[in-house]
Length: 294
Image 1: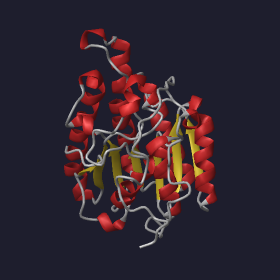
Image 2: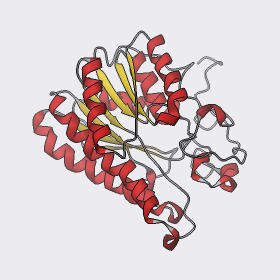
Image 3: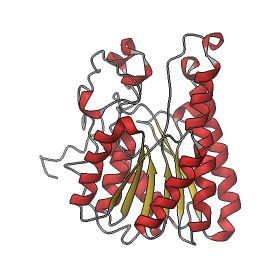
Image 4: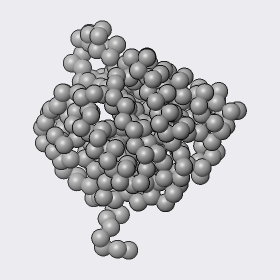
């Protein structure tokens, strides 16, 4: 075994906590300390997604960027949906996709708007020449000081970002998906073990689990697989944007592996679920939680 490769999952990344820091959502990867690892220097593809075309929401940073990098290096062309404020991060991700020799399309807009979601799918199909993989990854969460303090406009923002957009994007994409295509959602351990301070976010993540299982039942006879990944504590811009800086020094240290995960550690699950090797996996919720049980 090479001494240069740390295969111990406890020490592959730092076990130390993160310094207190805050960002307004949407956050920026470059403003985080430390900068997340999206697999820029480590992910090596092997052609598992050759010729496929993927649309990834929230693909500018965090988990979405890691998935975009992995998909491109596995041979897929990628369209990235992002907020206009995230254009700098989106451009960086697009450059990494193009560096892998694949087509990258960036689509700026707000998934809380139905018309934008419908147009994003059409643009991805037009510019990529079709669609084989839909990754529903965009998300929003905030620390809540109490259930009675949640403003209706915030509740609405969480649900429109995390749930409504999935319905709109999935409905628009379905006519373009053929047998062998995949729909993959990013749910969360919060769907199964909800934190009170994330109650509205956790509600949407539980709904995403139901979405995945029900849609897998409906689309299975058409040869389209539907799955989800359930991350645990992962170091992405969403975390300093949640407004809980006092929790960052211990973020992720309550997992059996003793640390938070990095976006790069999520990407292989999304590659597997999109690949032909996963031809008999549908309706599954794949945990990537550092050992925390769902």
